Image (cartoon, rainbow, N blue to C red; front, side):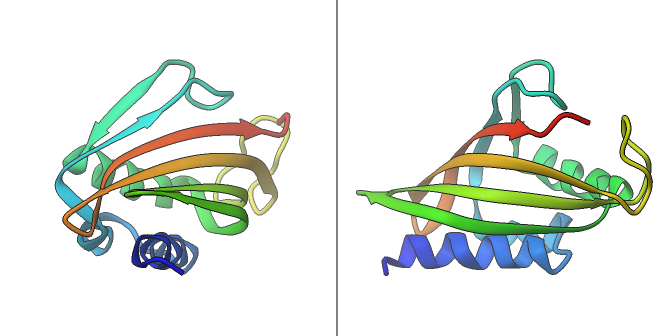
Length: 131
């Protein structure tokens, strides 16, 4: 397994165990940029630099009481790791028809480009179940 794939696995495990904000900073390059393509939750293409990523992860802790990523497939192409994952989030607040304590599910394709051993670019393509 490549070092980059191992880093992605460690990053997702940090998210699985409640990591957010500054605790995720070590995974990202200082000039990191994440792009989230439009989906049911995020209506418009959204770009986040490192400070915005940290802030978004802190906001997420108010919405989710827990989350879990299950990697279904992974691919390595040079300095890029591509994963297909099933994401399950336990809600801290109700969203749509899902009550607080209920689960939201999505299928993610995520592309992680590395520079200097850190996540430099991240692209998310998220497909949520109806809620």
